[in-house]
Length: 106
Image (cartoon, rainbow, N blue to C red; front, side, top):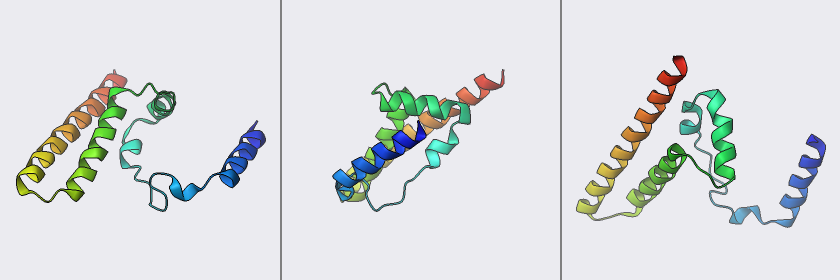
């Protein structure tokens, strides 16, 4: 099975201009991914790839969007608002992660 998947990937790579992919040439930031317990990562990845992202994955997307918005924002008032929203989203995500860890320990 692994061989056929490798073949499919190689074919796709040969037919596709990988430079057009989002984030091409940039290192992946996997910090948030590895903060999740190992047994939950695979499930979240499968759900996300199927279009059924859990709340936490959606929060990660929102955090990424806010960070990108912050980079291009030049207005001080808007930057302060974006920073506040970003901090709120990061706190919500961290709380959900901690709740999941504590729930798992029980």
